[in-house]
Image (cartoon, rainbow, N blue to C red; front, side, top):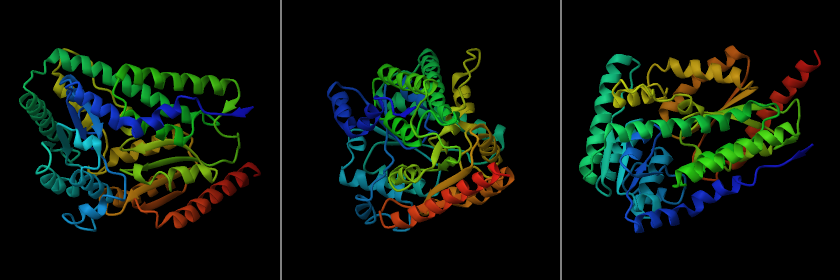
Length: 396
């Protein structure tokens, strides 16, 4: 038995670092770039328009000081970092974006978009936040129609139903593959580390050749599965190692002091639930071409249970299912300071975890290094508690 990771993991770690060179190459070739912030942005429409999609969520402490000259200090760090990068022209992805698409998943972002629209061409998609499906669907379909029309007018093109159908099929294929990557965490021991999943997921949005990207992910999945069958695991097998689900919104900028530390201290992150995790990947757009493709796209995205929806019973049901399916021993909720929807919803997550007999750790943080020691101490204690519980249960 040995431990290793497939070699192509480094390709995704490099993707973000080198992505700005690829974006410039695309611009030099006359291609158009669409910047976006959230999984609610309909990728099918962007792809059908021939645009290249890139994520703009800030994850660095550096531009926040600049942003605070125009935004309040007690705002979510992701919002401030994203806006600060645009103000400073320090993010090449934002700099080269021909249009930025915003979605109304929180009040802070909504108001920030008003200021961002003074610096970059923007289109805002208004997301319904009530679980009344029929009423919300009508509104959401109209927003997606307006989004399509806005892109057509901005770039002087026509997005046909045929283009959209082709994008639906491709995006479904990509989501199914990405979900398969997360399902490697169901293995015991896991066939992939949480950091490995995170690196691939993060790098996806900065790789612009879709077929090359798809093939590389497939190679990783197949190599992980082959390694596992041959007794080659990414971590040493340990029956008492805590299996963890990590959740939250916009925490990518905290990964060094959260994700990395959790696994460094002996935990196994087996799944991510939330904005960029399994939540949006489980849902495919219907490929029934007898129905309006924009309605089918709207149905898919509306079915993703974001914390902005109230009451959000569907997310609680999904969390309960995920705990069972990934055989989790614990749940870690990571929220950013002033991210009220996710922070308040943590109490309902705690109740779900209690009903499943597992503990929850809530980490509220930002992009600064000031709380690294405190987080490490809390994570270490949480993991030790779970390990002791598993050992005690094994000896009953």
